[in-house]
Length: 142
Image 1 (tube, helix red, strand yellow):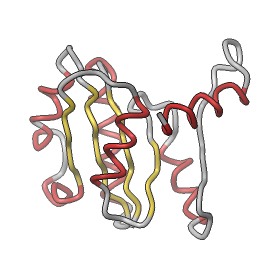
Image 2 (cartoon, one colour):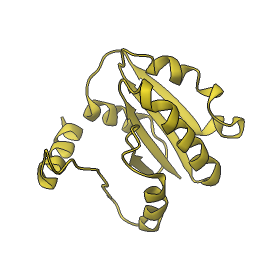
Image 3 (spheres, one colour):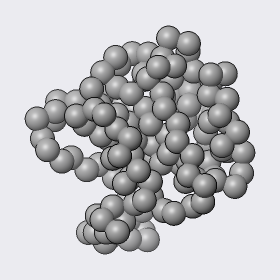
């Protein structure tokens, strides 16, 4: 099993599209679960997540978990919380803004035997690949 770790902060505008894509993906892929960690959003993100049963097919309710942090503490802290909550062998970081295609996730399944695989979108106009990678590692550690 693989848990899709989905950190989320103030994504009410993009969340419905993401949920629709995730619903389709989970229906087709039995080996995946989803863990949303709402990082203290102050828009309607929490309300949408609290009512997730309206958006997901009933057959996958048991594959979805939602955890709400009281205040925004950053994606690194959300990841640490995910590590505490996840009970699967693998965890996959999935941004909730559709930066990573669900087709890409299906492609990565062939790398099951790798201990650590990091896929991350990078705004190369703003940051170099190396800076972004180091930033993600630092946020995870601290």
